[in-house]
Each structure stands twice: as C-alpha cells, then as structure tokens.
Image (cartoon, rainbow, N blue to C red):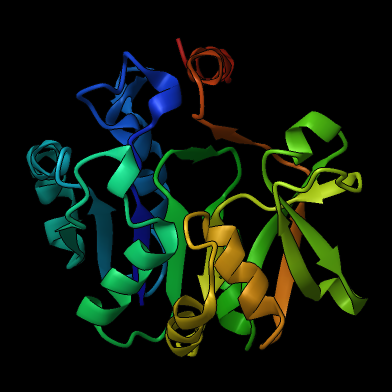
Length: 254
C-alpha cells in the first residue's frame, strides 16, 4: 500500500511567497505544510512507500527536504520517492491527474492507494478513515460538512445516492447545493489505475483530481466518509496566515 502526494502546482495565488519556493514546503507553525500530512501518513497500517510528485522548478527543494525524513522513515521500512514531472511553469504543467498516472505507472500495482494534495492540513485523524477503508471493498473519499456557497464554489461537491454512495463529484460548481464538499483526500482500490488510464484517454479536464474522482464514481462504487471536522487548504496568502493562526491556537501548542 502506498501514499501519493500531489505537489506539482506552481501556486501562483501565493506569489511572491511561491515565486521560487514550493507551497507544500512553506512553514506553518515552524514546519513545512506537507510535514503535518506526513506525520499522519507514516503511522498508517500497511503503508510501504510515499511518492511525491513535483515539477522541474521545485524538484531540488523536495530532494533537500527529503533528507530530514530519512531517520524517521528508515526504522519503519517506508521509502520516500520524489518525482519530477518535467513542468517548468504554470503554462506547461501536466495537471494533477497526469501526475497521479506518472506515479501509478512507475510505482506499479499496490494493494491500495492513499492520494492527497500536498497543500492540505487535515484536522482529523486519517488513521481512523484508513482503517475503515481497509475493512471494506470500495473506493472511499472524505466528505466534510459545509454550507457556505462561496467555499463550495471552489471545491468538489459530491452527489449522493443511497448509503453514502457517491454518484458524482462536481468540481467547482456555479450553483452548489449546501451540505458537503470533498477535499483532495482519496482512498483507492487497485482498479483505480486502469480507470485513470481510461479517464486520461477520454477527458478534456485533467488538472483537478476531482474530475477523475467524478469519472471513477460513474464506473465503480465509491463511498463517502462524512465528517464534521475541518481541513486547512493553503490556497492563498490569507488562507496561509489563517492556517498558522488556527494551528497555533490548538490546545497543546504554545
């Protein structure tokens, strides 16, 4: 079982902070954004390797950052691989779905995949969701409670069937229904590899991973795990400073 973290964006909305520095490595409470995610992933049962996709501009940043994790990962027998997708600017980026395909092809088949954007900090325990996923037989995505229409217009909004089955995922809809949204955190069965190949052969929209999840929902059973907790999406200067403030105000932090 492997984890795939998508970190190949150029984060133009955070300029000048990200003009020559990757968003997932920006510090929040003194540690890179992605470290908050890895803290959770390294303890998940069955995870054998972590695969991070970045671009040509930021590849060396991530290879230097990786050294800080070697001592932590070695006793756990977890490998950490960094991929360069070759993109040099926002105009020639491959998109998240093609980056995911890159890892799927090079990493080979795994028993299961955890896929996440590398710029999200989740304020809930991923381990609980991962164990629930492993006990079942379906792909799973996370659905977080949200009623603010402006927030919903900038994320993926699920279409539900019976028993929390997800029939589709509307990426950044103009008129979203209140209730739930899906952050870029997915638990996928091995068959997702072949479905992704079919999707990329046919799709016009391949940047946001939610487009692939929508395609997957229409072909194989996908279940939502509904939560009331929050996530911090580092998408703008304002949300970056908000994440810093929220984490510093959490109990146990000075």
